[in-house]
Image (cartoon, rainbow, N blue to C red; front, side, top):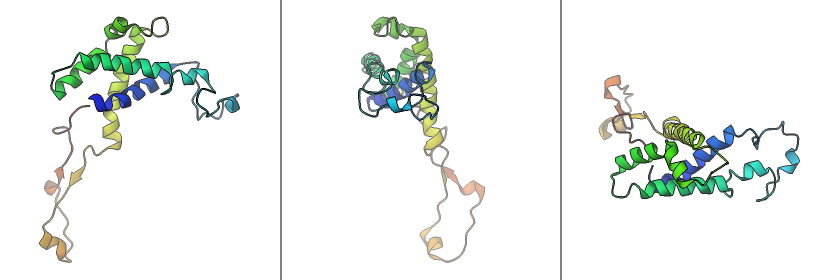
Length: 168
């Protein structure tokens, strides 16, 4: 996860924490008794949801923690940065060190949510991206002819697979 992905990961981690909060109800849930009070205007509506949103403090605090973890990875190659960030954010020590969630969320809960978010974040690409996409190419001459060519299985090539997929 490089700097350009920090906001995406912060949003994923915020979603993980939001999903675990017993006081926050899903915005799209039609069973909410006070649905009308969940105003779309920024700063109004469900106060529990607001604290997790992009305008809320949880999201901003997570960005601060990710920034601190990124500072500790200066000079490392991309693959090592990914591994170092995953290791740092998946352990309670960074949350204790920065201590901006004191009394609100435990470092263990934050580290567990971060590990879950990272696992899901890496799988997002596999689920909705081009992971395991294959291709088959034929010559221009064959393409210009009107002959139907059915490729054999051994003629397909995997474009993005386990061997050339870089972990986020």
